[in-house]
Amino acid sequence: MKKIAIAGILGMCALTAQGQYKQINMTVFGMDCPPCAFAIRLSMKNVRGVSGVDVDLNKGLVTIKLTAGSTAELRQFNEAVEKNGFAHQDADVLVEGVLSGSSKAPLLQVTGTNDRYALVPFAQGVDVASLMGKSVIVQGVLPQSARGKVPVTLRYKTIAVSK
Image (cartoon, rainbow, N blue to C red; front, side, top):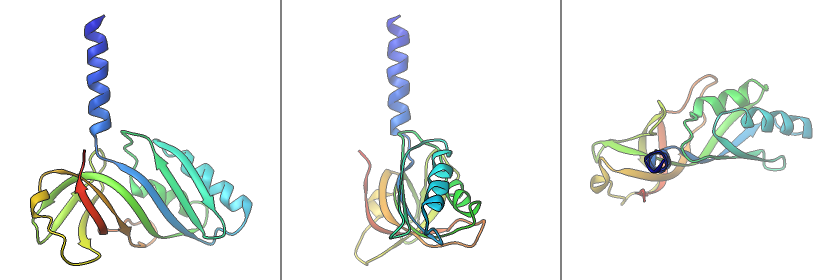
């Protein structure tokens, strides 16, 4: 019985250490009525790993919170917007993943997903060389992409080693 409990605890630790989207604040163009907001909220909640969705009609903003260990991909959130007849614009994200590439061309692989982004700083002066190969938490902006597509770059505001 002890072995099963220990294996369960170790499994949960591994799950929470996995990289993922933590929060996505997505601007949605055309969402301007309560039924629109309800449709978006329902579509987002149907994405596996979503723990909460807040919709602000005045700002056209959808805030998506995700559970620990979620493997949801950005494509799923974009599709949830598009299938309701709306367009997604820039998205502010808080995401965890592994940094690879080089200090001049860093890449973020969102662990547990197929999402991978070239990192571009908002401002100069952030040295990512010491972060290569490490699990990091990145706050930044994913630019608007064409319908059915996901962005390939993430403009980061902050980047730090994940704890």
